[in-house]
Length: 182
Ligand code: IMP
Ligand code: MG
Image (tube, rainbow, N blue to C red; front, top):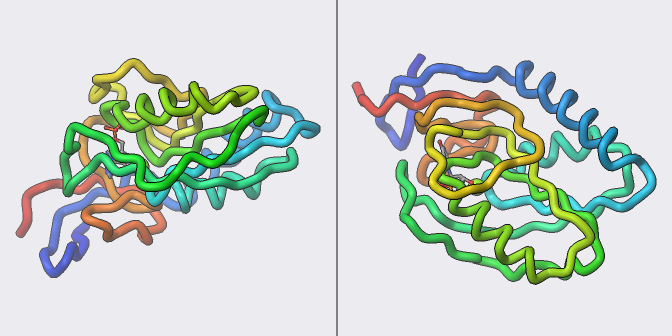
């Protein structure tokens, strides 16, 4: 199939349909529910903007009392990593809290590594990570997620929150964007 990226038609292949994603979110949330239980508060720390849509669907399947916080990191320009991470917002106060970091994708691991280093100083009760997607072959930093939706190859993907230059987050599926334009 082809998708319109700022006026250029690019070749794309659907990797995970809306239905695939929702089935997997059910499974992930069941694991999180079983691990955390329904009594203690869990702070859902959403890494904006990419994880917004995933987190919105995930959180509605969780059974414990939740609080929502957001953080903005920036590490990507267009289709490649810039090599450094910026914290665009302040970390919320997470002292004494159980925290679930929700990410869209772990690629090199640089962003998550940076965030986890920052969280070390936050005096949290616990920190776990849930990422919709994971690219194990792209890893440069030693980080792992506790919950992963799907492992994928190193290719650049878009949709369901993931963007190319800020666009295509609204696609209801995850698609592999093949670089050749025609
Ligand atoms: P990392 O720091 O290299 O692990 O990259 C993490 C961030 O880069 C993710 O949270 C995404 O925002 C972005 N990113 C990495 N791979 C992709 C991709 O294939 N499509 C869209 N965004 C991506
Ligand atoms: Mg992200």
